[in-house]
Length: 245
Length: 245
DNA sequence: CGAAGAGTTGAAGGAGATCAATGGCGGTGG
DNA sequence: CCACCGCCATTGATCTCCTTCAACTCTTCG
Image (tube, rainbow over all chains, first blue to last red; front, side, top):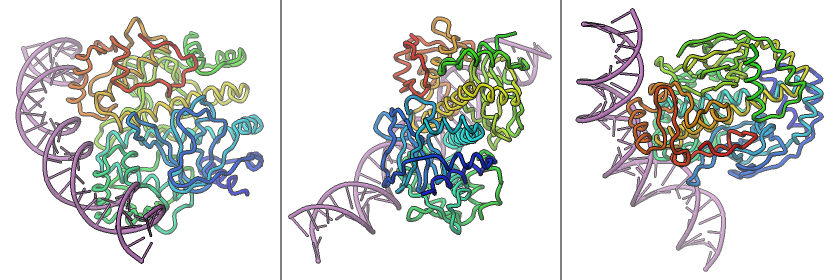
């Protein structure tokens, strides 16, 4: 099974030029593959991680636990992402990871990664860059959830996910997988579930997008982008591809 | 002038054990020191950075520009912080930096940092860790601005800043510098300025804190912590110091 | 002395939270 | 096979918190 390696390489190449030696180093990594079912938690807040996680297929979410038992979702990760390169240097997880839909995930021992970093520093830098990209997405989430009205907030999230899905080659025609419930959307965007529903209904009525059967369908990219005040520069993609639709 | 080096070393030691060789490498770094006045912008969204920034004294803010000319403040940085280690790997700044009060800032050429990373990989890892800490703070900001009611939101921000100021040895008695206006607080927490004022008035009335003449005064740390639902684990400080007051 | 900026306060209105009820769908067990 | 349950989406009604707008003060600075 070499898929995990390929998926990681493709993702890193999105923003970094890797030497053949780096590719070899990556292909030499060993990992454990595990499948999770929808909404299964597999890393908990408070855990002391010894492995890094690579999304091989499906989607993975990161979340904070709230006092009342609720969650705040922080980020969503697609095929090729390393949702917790963070954990590499952190004693104790300050957030949890769960599968959004069914997902398969590769666990890579920290020890092995550190050895690879030593042998190929440029590989380490690529992963570093990956974590900085992550941080840029967090920053945008702060702005999104703090400064944008509900409709724009939701539209922006859809834009980002679709744009990233496109880079991850997960878009088929005008749709990409997005196995998320309304409640989870609410816990992502900081809005009540009733508002999620009404806002989503508005967006559907606008004809810009739809969300059905775990798939996000973008009907009018330009409109959705405008509604969401979305500009993809913060994603820092190297090969700035032409607009999705 | 060696202060800049010391300040960086102290900050990194907060979470990482550095070898003497690392210290030497840091002390060998050359930099340009610049002073800025209150609210002066010194790195703009869209810039292509060739230097990293180290806060030597005062406070530095990071912000997104909004469509209407407004701002969303993303993070505040104290003495010893590297507010844009992000910029190390990023072609184009997705956010700006400004001085909050009067601040002096050291600019370190990226080129020099990369050379130092090559010679002392552990120094690179320390900076990497620093950027991950940054990301943890961003995550908490997402949760703060999305899931907490106004009063808790504000109290949480004050807790975090006071806690970090303490680690940076900026706390004198029960107060630390915080040269921020109500408008800026609003642009940080995603609330209207009138609400900022009223919420701040509540907090003052509770007797837990005060904010006067650019200083944050914590009168009852426990109360403020409770009001803000604040628990400092996400700051990942190595030497978990006893509570501030 | 006047203007500009920051803080303060009141009143009004609205956007979104909350509460509640309904319908659909899939799974489970009688 | 069908009844029941739980989960999810949907919708309406109400209420509250926050935004908006406006006026006023205080200080600083020209």
